[in-house]
Image 1 (cartoon, rainbow, N blue to C red):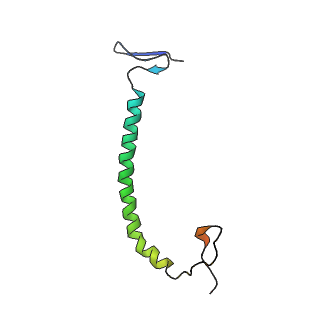
Image 2: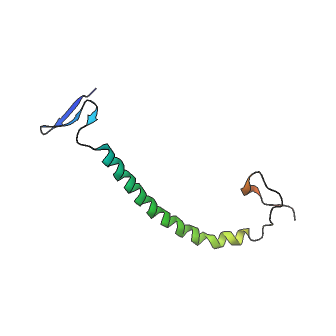
Image 3: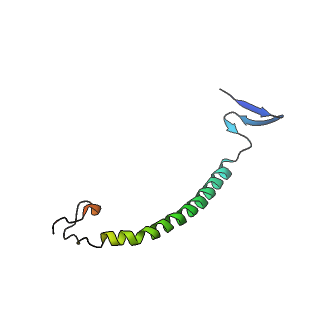
Length: 81
């Protein structure tokens, strides 16, 4: 097991701890980057949904409303004429 790491005369790691890295600062930066990435991805997802929406609405237009509450909401299509 490695206890101490030194580079160019500076101790970087000792006793299981990184001496130059601030875990809370790293965590905050990761959170910030993830939020930025999610915001970018969500805008693309919104565009995709809006582009597909008219087709979905036309597909489900002919379905009859279900008169009973199905166990699974997405299996509520009635097959009888």
